[in-house]
Length: 138
Image (cartoon, rainbow, N blue to C red; front, side, top):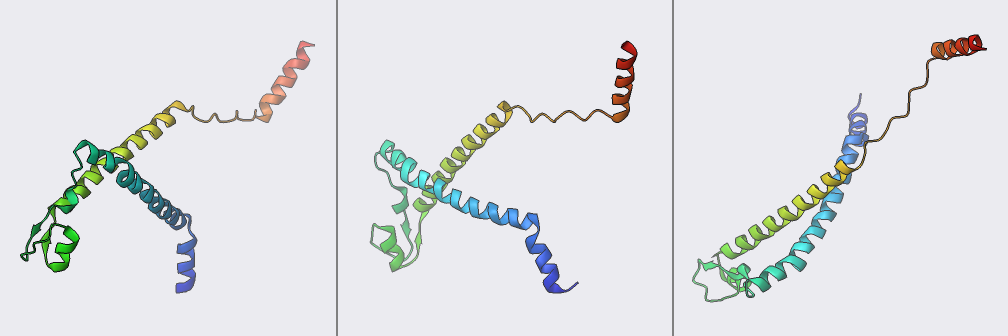
């Protein structure tokens, strides 16, 4: 078996295709969840905390005097602990949203009855015995 044939078999197997679809859907879903966190939830958190924005909290390591993180990074190294706090809060919110979604999906799965298998066809010998029984009753 040649290398090209072997690769073709690997690439068209169901597992690889399922994985590719999963990665693509996961990336698209990640963008949706990221938008929910950044555009819907974080503004509410900011409102509740009085407009507190952790992303500009940093310690300048190169003697910068700027109060904006982007400008301080241009001037030299910074210890951007506020950005880490923001990312950590985003992760916690994201994990909570995913938890709620998985919980709902599991609840829906439990509420749906399992598919009922169609009854197995009656064996031929049983059918013949029934015919004999019915003819004897007459």
